[in-house]
Amino acid sequence: MQKLIIVGGKKLNGSINISGSKNATLPILAASILSKNKVIIKNIPLVKDVETMVDLLSLLGSKVKLDKKRKKIEILNSNKLNTFAPYKLVKTMRAGVLVLGPLLARYNKAKVSLPGGCAIGSRPVDLHLGALKKLGVNFKIRDGYINAIAKNGLIGNKITFPKISVGATENTMLAACFAKGKTILNNCACEPEIKDLSRFLIKMGCKIKWLKKRKIEINNVTNLKPITYRVMFDRIEAGTYMIASAVTDGRIKIKNINPKIIKNEILVMKKMGIIITIKSKEIIVRNSRYIKKINLKTSSYPGFPTDLQAQIMVLMCGANGVSKIIENIFENRFMHIPELNRMGAKIDIKGNQAIIQGNKKLNGAELMATDLRASVSLVLAALSSKSKTTINRVYHLDRGYENIEKKLSNCGAQIKRTE
Ligand code: EPZ
Image (cartoon, rainbow, N blue to C red; front, side, top):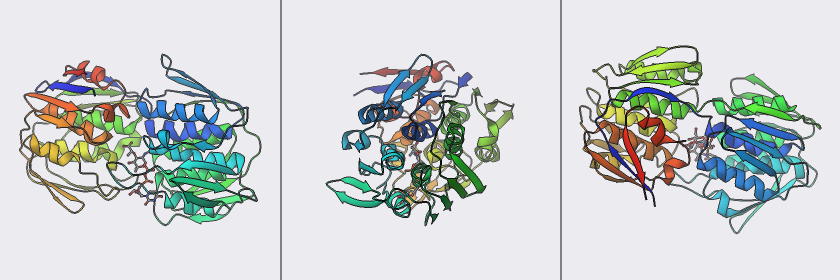
């Protein structure tokens, strides 16, 4: 298994081009199942999860061409697809369950593996199934698979999610595109990636309208149009490199972004004393020498994203005073803490709350990556330390960060990958 060797202590200085959003690309790829016309998606991030979704679509019978050089995917689903999504692909990438909605929309049936849990939590899909049931879908869970069928086709309905869920909102939105009549979805997640998905669907000819912040109206359509669509930037990658600049006392220009989408993250980091200059499509992030402690809690958009919790914790280690962070989204998203403590951090866990002692200088160590965002927080900690760190199992990183070594070494980091 590959590992990363990092020698920290360098002030990162330079520019980083932010890639397309993994969490917008995955549902948009699943949405392509709805169309019998050509679908071209641009600004694709070259990350493992996107390749896994491409493999899944190909397995369903889609004709998919991934052009890595141009970061573009061309998909043609003119022929009948099969409706079986196997465990081997869905277990490594839980977003595979997002093919359930579009397969039901197009074929009224699907057999999709239950995604199963992962390092950060049990990752249930009850909210997905509860909403799809209200569209007329019946399920049988057997041998780890969701056997779904809508005998009379999908019928529009009024649905209120009992709890905000990104995936359940996406799956239900996709299933409802062809459902007879009108569907109203209440208490939806409204992450920018879901807005990007709805823009993609509307451009393809679907009738989707955001009536309120968390309320969507969907009317059924029959014909869709060929489409070329450019995916939005990855706001979590952008936030990660903002923190990389701050923890190394550097100066990094973060390019190809829309600062409005990450205004809350910018506000949090400014409150901690980070100096951020904002331009229309880029920001410049510098440390201020005096990092202030802060108390944060993760919540659905527009709150502070759970996907930046592990990363901001590294910045809190160097802050003046004790910071706190409450993780409200996932039940086991503190896997990075024992590894950070082995580097000299002093972080205590009380339930879903982490208490981070400040003024800690981290030292390099031999570390183990556990999940995507925990892994990148270890990279940030290694960059901020003055010595050598080895991070094992970097395949976790490759799921969501394109060319991370190249982007960081272009800013002066001493980082290399070995077998
Ligand atoms: C999406 O996961 C993202 N993944 C996650 O990013 C992100 O952390 C999460 O949303 C929250 O923003 C993709 O978009 C591919 P949820 P998802 O459904 O859809 C519970 C990353 O690092 N829940 O909003 O799985 C669930 O257990 C990944 O890029 C149910 O109880 O998140 C969690 O506690 C990690 N029942 C909470 O809701 C369900 O049916 C939020 O989950 C579904 C979810």
